[in-house]
Image (cartoon, rainbow, N blue to C red):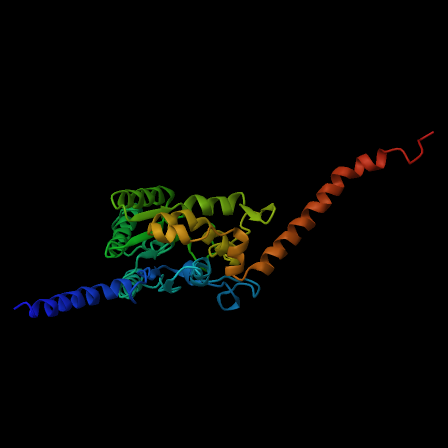
Length: 319
């Protein structure tokens, strides 16, 4: 009987060691952190739509998908980031949006970035003619919210910007919610997110309003660039430029961080706007904007100093 005890203890020790092996790997090694899984869902902005000659825009219009920009930000983190965003979501938001969620869920994501996912559940033509604008659009919005509710992990969405004034090639006036409807839609989004701790809402409405009406401040190195109104939108006045995508991604940082595991937040660097320009391949665009702003400023400075210089006495006195 006693001879069997050492053998039994050896067997138990072997079971314990092998049961711990998946967590610790080789004996003495620490557990490896889990790979962070991020999925992008959304429409044409997230997909990087370019308003080029095929859509009636200019050849110099340019943009970039959100995917490479986020991958650049997370390059120092063990993360797998995929995009399901589709520029044709306007054709059938429910069907295409549903497919995006299906594909995202297969990856069991920790976080889904869905900044413009709800846009075409609020904008677009109304199919229910006997309902008022707000009522019909609220019904459609709920369909989009229900799709997002299938995601058990964290979700970053945005409220809805006022895209009135967009080129009719992209957005006809009848497809734009009335101002009162837009307010109710954003109230519904806020109420939906408020009771879901796993959801954060990026203020896209106020961000786009500032971009369109006043321009925004871009921190470029040791100075600030003040863009012109519409300066970060393409010719269609609807889709972001490369610089606009860099600015958007940079602005998303605090909202994304709130939704990440603490261990990831500690290792994820805070990026500058200039770094996001590199991720968006927008370095040349940034230099061009600096040059254009400088060309605009120089004549203004000369006009201010001109009269004073003209009236100044010549060197050596005016006698």
